[in-house]
Image 1 (tube, rainbow, N blue to C red):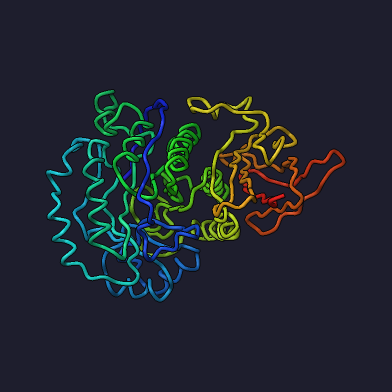
Image 2: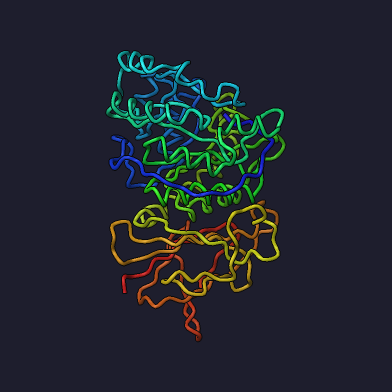
Length: 434
């Protein structure tokens, strides 16, 4: 997975199709925002380290082995596992096997594996592959349906390429061979057409790529999820490509809060132990690195907002105040000076600095509404600053929640609500039905 350094800017298109109506997960509580991570290697499968996962607000681990002793510890501490190795594996890699999944992994292999499977209450999901080509999506639709049937207590887990998917020699033919389509938006369109999941999961590592590609990838996947009634799951980086550079606490916030402004419902961090790259949360002896305390703080902030956040679903996201930056170059959406979404009016920073703002509606069809706003003037954490967010609304009751709990709102003489919002911080603003 990943380790891809080259990328190609890809064009935009439209989304279609719908997933099956019932959520496949029997053990993951999908009414909550769940936080995951990749890899808990055998050298770190001690009770102390499993407890450390729970203490860090990690709800589940992807790429776990089907090891009963460790799974028993997961059950004890309320951590779920997405297990790898139960079913025939698949990784799209550089695309040299694109379109060959059905030949290499015929359906009987999945049925044979299911017959040997020993269930465990801590197993939430079954890994069915990583970063496949769109040429394999039609067969993956069949695999997804079959796995959902033969593993009734688990959901099938499938993760997709980011929009910088590339190959060792980045020419047009090979890029298409990896994605299986001419553009990334077509790649996602083919996914929702063929695979009946009720989520789309993809990985994006902004500090190994760039902010522009991150925004466009969020836009494409979030719009596909909104239009087809799917949840968005995203894999972000707590580690780093350069062993001499550690991802900062504010960089973790930037990734998580912007994803939530686009409606993310599962946030998955890579990597907890050795998986790819450097500076994991635990070192190769299973000891905590400096990333543990950073992630623990940011995950706690996410959880502080999460219950209120999950009362709503995202309908659209705006880029406000981006004039003078290059962060929307190549992004298939224009920036605006202020947001007016019918509930919130003239939403902007008092100093004109950029924010990403996600408009949300009541998930159960009520008339309450929300806005999730992230301050994004300093994504590389070079010069964090203090800002003031201002907006108007005709609704009578207005509350705000940030990573540290309730945020004080003030109303000025012009009828604007204002609140403090520092660089890379996020806030959920809720308003009443009337």
